[in-house]
Structure formats: structure tokens, C-alpha cells
Image (cartoon, rainbow, N blue to C red):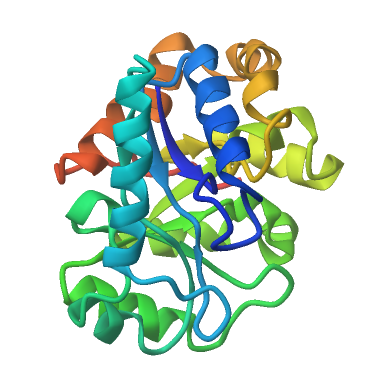
Length: 246
């Protein structure tokens, strides 16, 4: 499996609080069955704004130490970018990293209210051959109210990433109900832990996968956890099934 969403870089956002916790999280991920993790610490302008090269340097230092400890797990550069009007420009300026220098960008939307300018920003990204992967749509209130709002985005080529822990109710019952609907109706294209701390998500992956196996067939789970994430980090096209209306 490849984890498409994790906050393991130390002290650059609200994720890992120390180098020690970073290595504990990575070891937990490896033990849970992940062979690679995409580093997606937050990018929020003027709040969490470590740039592409600064993130890469930290990842390289971590990877070097993992090799010394014989921990075989790949780490890819990226960010969870909070939507704003200047994302395309910041990508072109080398500030915001896409996933492993691919055309794919993990992006977060507001949790409570739908952003009026979101469609224009997403259109601008797609026009510049940048494919948004919207993080954890099941957590957004307006998606919980009407999951079908995702269909028009998927038709345009936008991808969606759900959180593993949503499946076991980690973020509440409304989120759990919504993620199951999205998974069963072809509205999710990859999964990630969104892990911020040691001893939280990675250590519960057995339980999460047990629940996931009751929701989807094994072939579909493999696509969401391994095949599609591998295509993303390798900058390959993902075949999108037309979603079923809920």
C-alpha cells in the first residue's frame, strides 16, 4: 500500500511534534503494510508555508536515516494545500510541491461552507495540466449534506482521496456514513491515513482494513490503496469510473 496523505514531517505543521515521533510514525506505517508514504504536511499561506525544496531536504535527511536502520519505505514529497487563488502561480514558482513532481496536487477545501471561487480555481489548475486530488471530501459538511456535489468535479477530471480512519468513525458518524456512500458509488480514487500523530491511525490499520473489506471487493481496495496511488506518484493517467448518483 501507498499512503497518499500523511503529516509525518517534524514541526512544520500540526503533525509530528518531533524527529522521534516522525520515526515512530514511519515505523508504524511500515509495520501496517505501507511500502511508501506521500508527505503531505499542510501548506497554508502565511501559516504553514515551508516550500518545496525545504520539504525535500527534510525528507532526504529522514530517508537517509531510515536506510541506516534498514527500514525499507519510500518517502515522496508533496503537500496538503489549502485552496487559495494563487495556487497555480505558487506551483510555477517552485513554492508548492505537487505529488512527487507529478501533475497531481493534494488540495484541501473548507470544512463547513462551499467556497464560491473553488470552481474557478480548480478550472485554472486543470487548464495548466495540474490535477487536483481533493482531500477527505467525506469530512466536508456540504458533501455530507449532498454527496452528489462531487459528480460534476469528477466529470471534469478531479480526483478525491478519502481517509482510512473515516471508515471506522474516527471523525464521527456523519463522516463514516458519507465515506461509505462515496466508496460504494465510485466517488473515491485513492485512500490515505491523514496521520498526524504516532499511536493513532497506523496502529489501527488492521481494524480499518477489516471494515473496508466489508464495504468493497478486494480488487477495488487494491486499486484505491496501491494501484491508483502508484499511478499518481509515477505521473500516470488514472481511469475514472463514472460515479453512480446517490
